Amino acid sequence: MILNTLLVLHGLIVLSFTIRILVRDDLTPPARLAWFIALILLPLAGSAAYFLFGEVDLGHRARKRHREIFALIRTRAARFMGMPDGVAQLIERDYQPAFAYAASINGFYPVPGNRAALMADSSDYLDRLIADIDAATDTVHVMSYIWLEDYTGRAIGRALMRAARRGVTCRAIADGLGARLMIKGPLWQEMKEAGVELAIAFPFSNVLRTLATSRIDLRNHRKISVIDGRITYCGSQNTADPEFRIKARFAPWVDIMLRLTGPVVDQNQLLFASDWMQATGEVLDELQLVAERHDDGFAAQVIGDGPTERHGATPQLFSGLLGCAREQIVLTTPYFVPDTTVLEALLAAALRGVRVVLIFPRRNDSWFVAAASRSYYHRLLDAGCEIFEYCDGLLHAKTLTIDGCVSLIGSSNLDLRSFDLNYENNILLQDRAITRQIHARQQSYLPRSRPVTLDEVLLWPYLRRIWNNMAATIGPIL
Image (cartoon, rainbow, N blue to C red; front, side, top):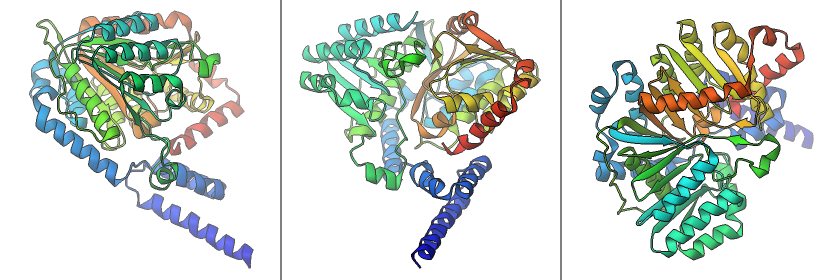
């Protein structure tokens, strides 16, 4: 009797999740199929997995709060977000559709008059950032997904404390998961006592409520620094050493960072403000929006995406950019699990004669992602894409250069987590000089990489190919 009751109850649970999957309009057919496979083959584990990870939704309150925050920003700072006619006035015709689409995500349009310096390496980035914080006179804002109490983490924390003690308003946001050890450690408390205003993005203060209403792995993956409203940094590096001691066997982490000045700083300031208000409920009324416009500067715009923006925004952005390419695409990412939109755009670009160069890490800290990534190699190589695997550490840089003219740099990986689950920040720019520098950095990875050939992939054992394809099949539900 008890067994029959349990079987009926289990059947009702599986049926309810099945109906839920069918009524959701935001799921792609591959994602639905993956969930059905999980529920049929592993009904108990599949039901538990859907309960924990199936819904990509922060809830009505979070979406409402997000809309209110951006409505407030548009009301008070619309002129700093750029104007729609900036796309036609500032961007070459071939790339206007991609920039226009980027502006549709959260309202940041291309703004002119920006300059950028590409940091030589992680040490150069840290030295420049610390110097900028030490020279700050008004505000310092820092947002990081991972923040470790290593040399880099302590150096930035101490610089913020020095600034706060001399009267600079310092605000720092760390993600509740990525920076969990630091938040519980002494440095976080020291920063608070020194006067640094602190916030935690998606804290683990109410895990049961999060599990019941959302997903525990919806995170803020952004990396933003804004100093005095005049300088901003954008790129892939977290507040951590390249040795990345929590995953030292994959080190060094190879990152890329830009230091930017000009009106795009105001846009990054507004994006940071949206995160601060979302995390704290505080309204930042006196934001510094004072970035100087350089007469010889280039056009750029900020892109902020996340689960409270419309579904599919990031893959559609990548697809639009890839569709604009006429000569060459070079892309680096540590995590490559594209959806159909991006995969088909890459294939189409190569088939129409664009040189497509893809650079991934040889050894990945996620064995599952590595397997899923390699499931796409056959189709990409068959279409004419070139694939290289970086061998000297974990290539963590997220870069895209197009035709030596357009660059995208920031925190977004080319995987389903960045597409659907994480808050991400990127800067899209049009400038041949800085794009040449980013492209040269991309090319510097090639001597330390090994090319992957179609003949090699065709010789992979069947078991390896089966595993790779299994990982890619399950990928849409993770």
